[in-house]
Length: 299
Image (cartoon, rainbow, N blue to C red; front, side):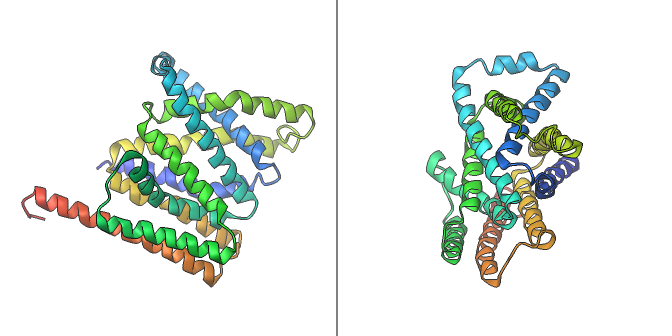
């Protein structure tokens, strides 16, 4: 196992975990405008990176098949929706509910794998999936409404991950194609609001403009770190590290931004945390059993 890969993974998930601080600094800008800036500057950043690495020809060869564009158009739409809901959640004071979406996501991804990829679950793996569903039902009853932010984030990112699992391109090339698909609509919208005099870039001070510009780097960098980590560390380690991000978001929402977190909400979150703990422990035990069988019972 690569120590460098572990540190890359920690860095990626830590960056995702502190994203609320970054986007809170832009709360004076509408979520839709922030999302489109994120698209535009991300696209320009990854294109510059590919040109510096002299991989433009390789990218062109890999995207020659028109079927690739259909897959990545769907992925781009899901990614844009995920970014939009996430930014809205942060700036509307729903960081805790947003973190819930990313706590739910691993178990939702398991369910999506069963439905769409015909993956098989061990009998014990159905327990955490059921517990997570119970937690969502409890929180729905508690809110008196479906926790749509959490579910929207979980489903958009879960479906995005499902598409990426079967998509042929690597992380950098995939992000380049996805942002390329969204680039012209995003740029058109930003030009339109600028001409209407309602755009933030260049009109709300240099600090706001710099943050909007840097959104491309802070979007692409953790994705690239994650891609490097995923290639060099086992999948179970990726699974452990992924909880850094929602944990960081949750703690920021409660401790820094003082979002309400009542004992009743704690019960709902605890059900989902218990589901995640059970899922991880069951997987750990299954791996040990498999290794023991392969080593003749020596571990």
